[in-house]
Amino acid sequence: MAELMRKPQAMTKLQAEVRRCAAKGKEMVTEEDLSSMSYLKAVMKESMRLHAPGPLLIPTSPWLIVM
Image 1 (cartoon, rainbow, N blue to C red):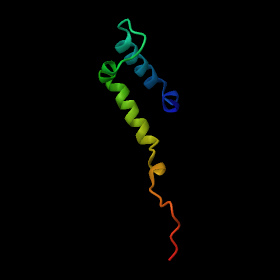
Image 2 (cartoon, helix red, strand yellow):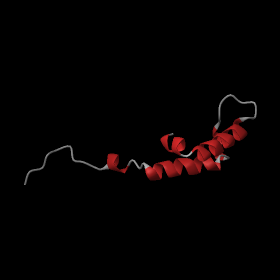
Image 3 (cartoon, rainbow, N blue to C red):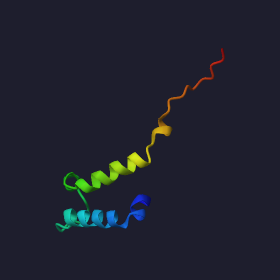
Image 4 (cartoon, one colour):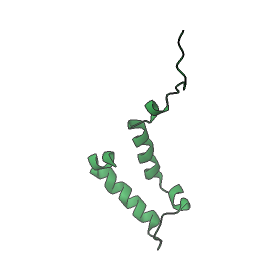
């Protein structure tokens, strides 16, 4: 969300895509709707690229090993 706030043009484009895909008289977006939202997928991938969860996934040993 923070990245979209920094880029209002991207937010406007994403809002238009979501409204277009979900404006079929539905209150909620379904999984079928998500498959047609290509810009949403691109935004999510870019967000994960910029803010990768990598440092959280470093394997650690539960035991202290002293040599």
